[in-house]
Image (cartoon, rainbow, N blue to C red):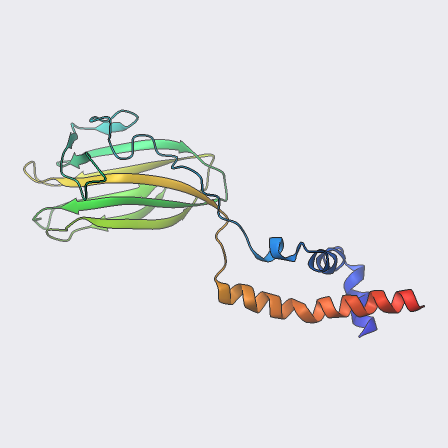
Length: 203
């Protein structure tokens, strides 16, 4: 066991890991805190009553079809219309991309898509979708990413979207079972380091 401790201490990772685990820094290694940042999206609930802060194609409207009393307006898209907004992101960070979505009766040619950068996260062909909350975890590949909502439908049919948010998660928190497994896996090495340090003092 002493030899195991010596081998572990020789490597830079082996040297740092036991020391951090034994001096109270272990929880900061094994647990990652999700930052509670405000949404990066401007006017995501269209509370201005228009498309302020949004780029768009066609002539999308803003109206009063909303999922709850918490909202006043939603964007209404149809017939090859889209809205988009570019936000600053951190390469490698995970983001929570969420929104409320609804639609009326569809024909097979209708489609609504939502994307984050080059990632298409949602597509709907379903008929008569009541308000639903959609949430996706996405990864930033660049220092800025564009969120976009696009409709392909007949001129008399609308898709509705509101409550659009993008929140920086930093690094996704591991599942509790994964954390527990990691702790159990590291315990023997921590114990080996303790025995090694004690043996060195005795010598």
